[in-house]
Image (cartoon, rainbow, N blue to C red):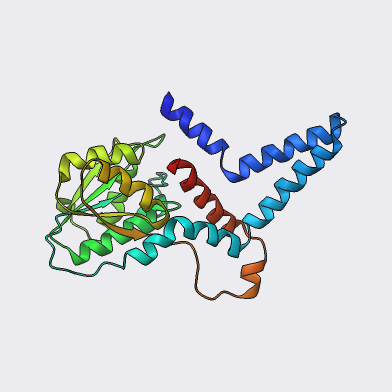
Length: 249
């Protein structure tokens, strides 16, 4: 019950529903009260904020606050001499439709995480790939969907471990520790989520080697219309930055 309540509250506090709620309150004030100035301020604030969060320079500046440190601090991993025995890929967005290709069931951040995990496995073929993530309302778990993708891309079944019970990052760290223990391992998750995830593993005295994936904040050149016209795509970047800010509180 507490877990579900936490998810509902965090969803309500995301930028779009929160700003729509503020705008709705402003409209109520305009239509049904004498607080016209307050209503105008709330409506103007909500729509101006939606506009700003939809612009690439604003959205990616916010996102860099959470993922930029990892872009600078960690380079893409290349084959090394370390005895890496485990590659842990954290769960993310998913669904399950057996009529779809396996990779189509990984949505939002998950596909980039899984493909990066598979890329690292190709460099450390003696390692085990650990996929995490619970079932939610689907027939099979996030971890099992990720495993299906890995199998379809040639990873042998003997190299895959699925942890299907964790519902969030804290539970993922708890379950991974049972297998990995205190030895170093590669931790794969989205760059903007890495700081949050790393804390849970370090708190358990584990030794993750961070391998960020799914970098979103664009610092390379863009066309002028891509930078200065509002876009739902870049609004999603602002939303991701806000989500990581909320869960870090």
